[in-house]
Length: 294
Image 1: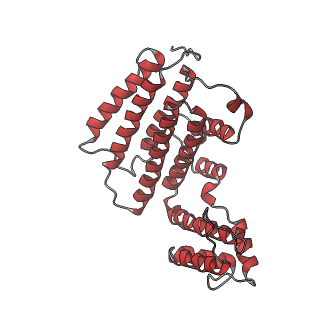
Image 2 (image 1 turned 180 degrees about the vertical axis):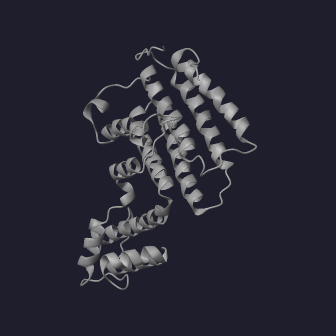
Image 3 (image 1 turned 30 degrees about the horizontal axis):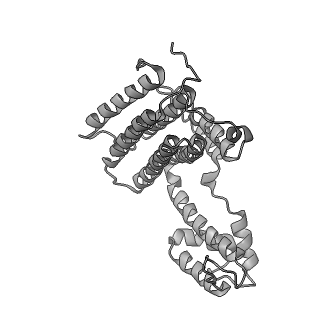
C-alpha cells in the first residue's frame, strides 16, 4: 500500500512538464478522430474545451497559482458533466445548441438593458444610442438558428424581435427568468442516475461520485473561501496527487463514457497510448517514488 507523505514537496517544474505531455498526447488522440455527425462535433468541441482548461490550469500550477488552477478545472468538470448528459440523452443535443444561442441573445439584451443613454462604451469615450443598440440586438437575433428564434419569440410572446418601450417588460421578464437547463448540474446528475448511468467495470461509482469532490473543492475556492486564500500554498505530494488524479480520471472517464459513440481506435492510437503510459509512469514515480501496479 502506498502511503502519502502529504507535506513532501514535489518539483513543480517536473510535474507540469509531464502533465503537459499527457495533455498534449490526449489532444493528439482527439485530433485523430473522424468527425462524421453533429453529435461528434458537440462532444469533441467540449472535449477540446476540457483540454484547453487543463492546459491553462497546468500553466497556472507552474507559476505557483494552484488555487486559480483549481478554479479553471471547475469549468472542465462542468464540461465533463455536460458530455455525460448529452451522450446519454443525444436527443437533447438540439436543445443544448438552442440554449447556447439563446444565452448569447440574453447577454446582448442585458447590455441593452444596462446601458444608459449617452453613457461611454469604451475608454476613449465613444457612445452608442439605445436605438443603435436595439438594431444590433436585432442583427444578432437574425444570425441564430430558426428553431432558437422561434423559442425566443414564443417565450417572450411577440411575433418579431424588435425592442421598444411598450414590449420591453416582456423581453425583460423572459430573459430575467431564462436559465439554461444545461447549467443545472444537480438536475443532470439526478437524470443520469435515474437513467442508470454507472461505470461498475471501471469506476464502481456513478458520475457524481467521480467528479463531485473535485467540483465541490474548486467551487469553494472560486467563491472565495477565506482559508484557501489566506494560507500560503506549497506544491506538496497531496496537491500533486490531487491534480494528477483529476487529469487521469477525466481522460479515462471520457473514453469510457463515449465508448461506442466515439471510435478512439485508429492507426495512431497504439503509439500515442504507449507515450501516455510512459508519462503516466514518470508521474507516479515523481509523486510516489515508484510505479504503481495497473
